[in-house]
Length: 451
Image (tube, rainbow, N blue to C red):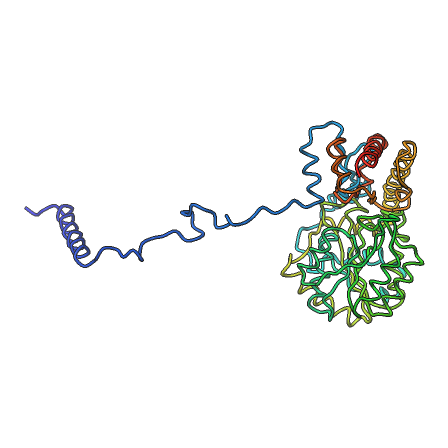
């Protein structure tokens, strides 16, 4: 009788396995400790994080104000730190013209979500250049300007700084003292050496024009100079047109390269053309310059991150070559910019009716801020608050540099729950007719009781 196939196969398999095990046990030695499995620095077996040495970074001095404000349970708290427009009711504002433009985009079934080119939306770039330089600008007609879409004003500054660090013979940029807190970081990280020139005069709470001329006059030939196109942040102090002309003459005579930061066009005076006059002066003389634009404030597109960098060159050929190098800066940085915000801007700027509606809403925002300045000035005068507060009306734009010191600011935060940056800068856009008396009381108490 033949054995069952399955039984015989099983016995043969067992014998082979037993032989293999005997062979392995006789030929192998105990595992060397060097061959043992150990946790790699990035494996999950490590008790401590490979990032445990990282120290906690400081809060951004401006955004940190909002963090502190949000933690305060007081019903009377007031946030005057962040540079974003608020309505009379203290609410964020989406412009009606922006909502209309967005609706048009949503209704257009032909729109797609493909990548934009590296330099962004072509129509947006063209219209942005016209907005800041003027539709009749000779530089535009002669194709001497290259404009690329960037991530709002900050991104535009960074792309421009990276380009200059790679392709400009001077690596030093002069920035006004004081200036927006992010300027130094942006330029330093791009590889530029940052120096300052005198700008604000604490004694007059106005422009230190003589100091400005002296510092720029002693700057090395070819140095880059950052200029706020209008509504200087944080002081709200701008040169007059005559002073701008003297600045232009000095800079051109020394071969200094202007880099304009235009974050508030139309938002300062209510006039798009008036707020661009400083930039246009420097373009009209045929010289070269850079300009960073932002649509955060003047269209309320804060979170859309819409901006543009323009470089005005001597010839169209140079402008074309500059653009080719800007692409090489942008591509490894963020590849290409987002499409939605730029499409909103282009939709408004190309349509005469929407454009006119925008200018009306823009002027209304500027006028409300100007009204807040007058109301605060009147309230301080009514309280006979010590000191001269005329600078509140003389300054322009979103911010007022109050002249309050850090101790007075801390006092106002503790006693009146009013939040602002420690340098005494307040956002006039964060005020309303209802909150002006509270602020005036706090300022009066601070300057009367705290030195």
